[in-house]
Amino acid sequence: MLLFDATGAIVRPGAIGSILHFLVRPNVLDELELWAPESAAADVVYQIAAKLKTLGQEVLKLYRPLPDAQAARTRFAGDLEYLYLLLPAEN
Image (cartoon, rainbow, N blue to C red; front, side):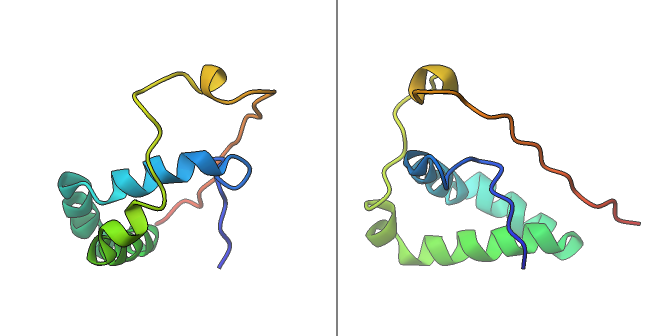
């Protein structure tokens, strides 16, 4: 499986907590579950989110979300790259 890190979390690991906490929100998990049968990518993300939900606070407390919304340029020092995500069209 090829994974493209459009979040930049690999080079800026502080962002991963926000992503993980977002995935376990009830409305996000519910939408992913509805979308999963129609999209293999959504199904993979749903499986990750569902497993994360069952692990609960054990994992989430290790990866705290970033504090309130703030522009990336003010949160992360240095030059920020532009990352582009290309998805194949599905027929």
